[in-house]
Structures are given as C-alpha cells and as structure tokens.
Amino acid sequence: MDMTNQNDKGIKIGEYVKAEVRSGQYVGELIEINGPRALVKVLAVLKHPEQGDLHNPYNPDVPMFHERRALSYTEKTTVLLRDVLPYAGSVPEYGASLKAAAEAEVAALDRLHRWAAKALEQMQQLQKEYK
Image (cartoon, rainbow, N blue to C red; front, side, top):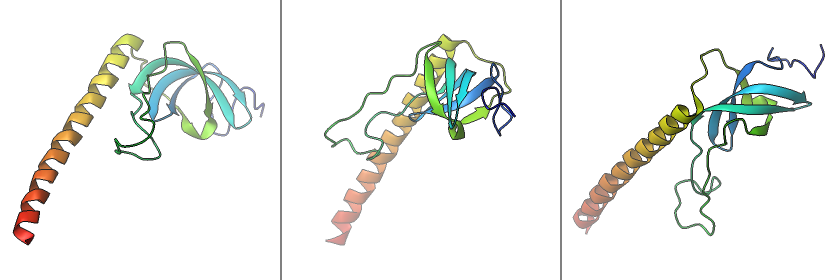
C-alpha cells in the first residue's frame, strides 16, 4: 500500500475527513499523508475550539487564558492520523457551519454557567446548614 495515498483507516487523498484539532472538530479534504501525520484542508467547522487553558479546564484563574479561533476556510493544518476519521456526510457551507458551531459552544457555556450558579447557591445553603 502506498502510504502517500492511503492509510490503514482506508482514507485516501482527496477524500473528506473529520479531523480533531486543538479541541475543535472540522470537516476537511485529505491533502497529504506523511508518516503519522496528515495534511487536511478545512472546509467546515463541526465543533468550535474550547477557550482557556486546556491543561486546566474550567479554571479561569490561570496565567494565560487562551483564545482559540476556529481554523479558517481552506486553511491547511497538520493533524495526527489518529485524529482523522472518514467523513461520509454532506459538507456544510463554511460560514454557516462556523456560526452554528459558535452558537453551540456559547449555548454549552451558558448551560455550564447556569449549572455552576445553581450548584454554588446550593453549596452556600448547605454551608449555612452545616454550621
């Protein structure tokens, strides 16, 4: 098998793939395979990258709170082959997919924020009862 055109996952150059890159997920075109890495051209955003320090998740008190932008349309990125899967669905339009992914991430963060506020309120009530 020619490793420059296909890998053990059966993905071939030119095919659509789903790739995970720095906590984001993208649909892209497989451009090149080079050993354990693949070059992917981004065509759509499935999941917006998370914000903050990935090594200290959900901790706002870190020295560097990272801002992660989604990869751009047709941006080429190197991805480990283990983070690349075949993609069989239709490829969404980039702008619409970016907007939907950002909205989904904001909704998830809002839900987490509301959960944290309610949990804090209950814990403060329990602290009063424990005295």
